Image (cartoon, rainbow, N blue to C red):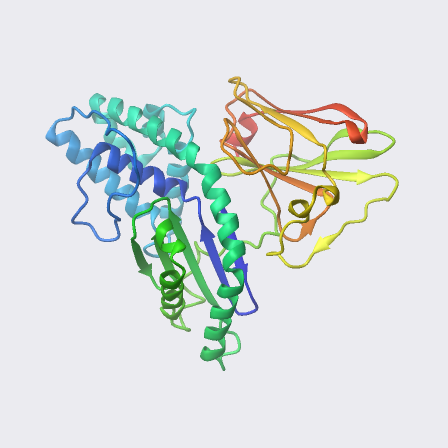
Length: 394
């Protein structure tokens, strides 16, 4: 999950989810790979339970370790990505993190992993380790999302004060823009690394130590020379949230239309580890007026009180073709893991008539069904169904 703070001369990209990095670290620790001599690699990070029982030859261990090192170097932003590296990274993320894809198929489809196909023993061990890593990552997702939301809200004023003070100090270059990319790993061990100017990697415990974190954040901004700011940021520049990613739907779909309301599905946006669904209500007695909140860090109106939530009373169930399902009876509930996980969130600018849902993981091929009921608006049942392959092909 990514959050963006920005001002007139600065922006920060936060990544509290970091799925690929966390999964790679889990694999390293579960397989007990040796990485002590490498820079930019954190120490043991997560509590993984018992290590994977590994019966590999010395040659196979060397093969796995070398592949892991290459993956880690690709995954962390040590330098601006070339087009080839960016393509390789997308290929790894799209396949390695997709639970429905068998590991031998992942190896066959990702050029960076194809050397692993030379050893059946390696494929067997990595299949087991990857299954465990993805399950662990799934169970941690809701907590990371909740931490990211809470943290971004709590530190907003401090971040703004710090960065604008730094911007003022570096004027009179009027077109100067400070940018930082911060990735937070899922660990309670204190570790951080300034990978390159403006790019910072740390563990959750570092982010929770506000004095330490803000000192490191200041160092991150100050490490960016003003002449380099506009030249070295191709993979860190994030499209503002109001410029929406492309939808898998060719057009909006009407889910319900009665005397009270029209309910539509406006967008389904696939991501590497899940998908977003955007529903929109149009109340017929008040037209299509929209209320926008200008402050992106303002607490969502639907969290303030139940009566102000235009989606109060809406119930929904998400069902995958493999029979996994999740029922949501209160959209204002605390974020929590499920199978699938369903989380409500807001996109900027906030629109009272829009409902955004984050659903993970990506559905398998076959019928993906979102069934809604909203008795208060005269909707007993409304079903939105699409083939999960639609998202996997994006």
